[in-house]
Image (cartoon, rainbow, N blue to C red):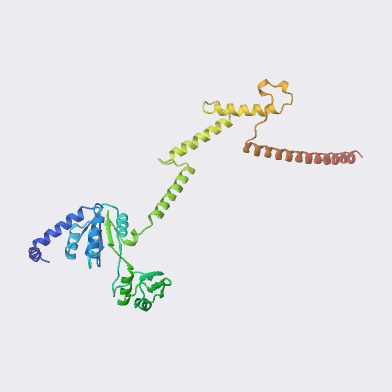
Amino acid sequence: MSESAAARRTETIPEWKKEEVAELVDFLEGYDSIGVVDVAGIPSRQLQSMRRELHGSAELRMSRNTLTVRALEEVDDGLEDLTEYVSGQVALVGTNDNPFGLYKQLEASKTPAPISAGEVAPNDIVIPEGDTGVDPGPFVGELQQVGAAARIMDGSIQVTEDSKVLDAGEPVSEELEGVLSELGIEPKEVGLDLRGVFSEGVRFEPDELAIDVDEYRADIESAAAAARNLSVNASYPTAQTAPTLLAKAAGDAKALGLFAAIEDPDVLPDLVAKADAQVRALAAQIDDEEALPEELRGVEAPAPAAEEADDADDADESADEDDTEDEADADDTDDDDDDGAEGLGAMFG
C-alpha cells in the first residue's frame, strides 16, 4: 500500500475509533497477563455479576473485534498472537495474577444455567430419582416421553430411578426443555470461557492451565525432598542442606572422638559415662565384695547396647571358630607327627 493510500485510510478512521483503540492499548499495557474470553450466551445480568466478582483481581474490557485486533497488533510484544482467538462474542481480560490463577478464578465464577431447545448438551443430562413435587397430571406423560422412569406415587409424580434423558453432544428438544424447566434442572454452566492468555512472553492454552494444584504442589514437594536427600547423601552443600551436613559431620566427629577416646571438651561427658559403665560392668563380675570400694558393692552390670551385644555374639562365634580351627590344627599336627615317625623309621630301618 502506498503512503498516500495509507494516509487516506488513516484519515477515514473516525475519531471515536482512534480513542477506543488508544483506550484498549492502555488496558493491554496496564496488566501483566492478558487473555481473551468467550462471552457468547451469557445473559447481561450474569455478565455484570461476573464483572463484580472479578473486581479487584481482574478486569473485563469489551469492544468491537476489529478494534480489539488493531489494539493487540499495535501493542505487539507478542500480544498479536491473541488475535487468532478474537472471533464471535469475546472480551479481553487483564490481570496481574499469573495465568493459572486467572484460569482457576474464571472457572470458579461459572454458574448453573437452564438450557434452551436447539442447544447442544455439554454433558449427559440426567433426571435424578425422587419426588418431583408435581401433582398427578399430564406431566407424568411428558417425563415418560423424554425417557424418564416416572409414575404417580403417594399423591405426586415421582422419578423411580436416575434417568439419563440426553447424551452429551446431542441437541435439546423443546419437550426436554419444558421438562427441565418444570423441574428446575440447570444442566449447563455459564461463565467466561478462556480461549488463550499471554503472560511474560508466553502464550497459554486452556488445557495447559487446567491443572490439579494440590497434586502439582505434592509433586513439587516430593521432588524437593528427593533433591535434598541426594544433596545430603552426596555431601553436596547448598543453602538448604548445609545445616544438615554440618550436623551430620558433627555427629560423625563426636562418634569418632568417643571411639578413639580423644579428650575433647565436647566428648568428655560421653567418655566419662562410657568409663563408668565399663567400671560397673567389671565390678559386677567380682564375687568378693570386700575387694571393691563401698560405692561399687552390689552393682549390677549394665545391659549391653545392641551394637555391643552384636559384637559379643560375633566374638563368641569367632572364638568358636578359633576353637574349631585349633582342634583341626591339632589333628593335623598329630597326623604330621605320625607321618614323621614313619618317615624316620623308614630312614633308619
